[in-house]
Image (cartoon, rainbow, N blue to C red; front, side, top):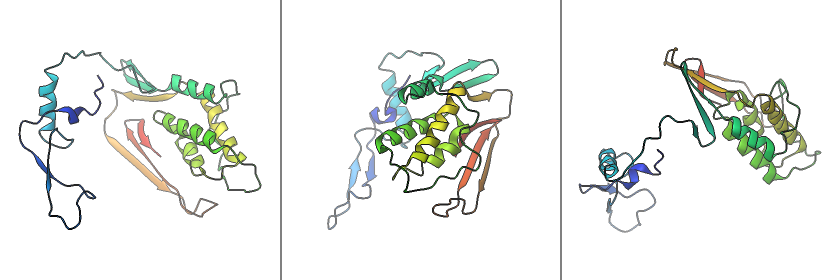
Length: 224
């Protein structure tokens, strides 16, 4: 089930008052409070109010999730596997890269992109739409996190080299469309995190780049 703004629909039985949020207090007026008409996230009454309202409507349990917002969930005996195979295919078709030759890596080793003004401009709408599509694909593809993060630095004054680097990521996806993350039920659920940083690795602005990755077992669930 997917209920939008779940806790905001519950009816409160008690009178609950909250302080005015920052920016809503008029200067010169005395401080007031708000009386809530509905539950809010964070209220201890919110879950109870939602549960009470839920008993008034017929709800159906649709079972285990198999597809949600472009993410495919494959239930396995050893755990579950998430991927975005269909979404990746749709992105390739949208940007006419579904017939391109696949490559083995999403970027060249030690790739350095610059703001070379001698190169031709690229349509910013096209480029930003493409990068946005790739950023969502990183939900289940930590292997493209770094490459997508690199091209995301160049969202203004776009040049051909930036577009070519982006298309290389698409060509890599072409050959790894079904890749994803396996969450195994045979491994420890201990949360482990790693982080590192270079020193002034950005050749354009001489800024350092940091990164991190969090694992549950051997599966990365968040990284950049």
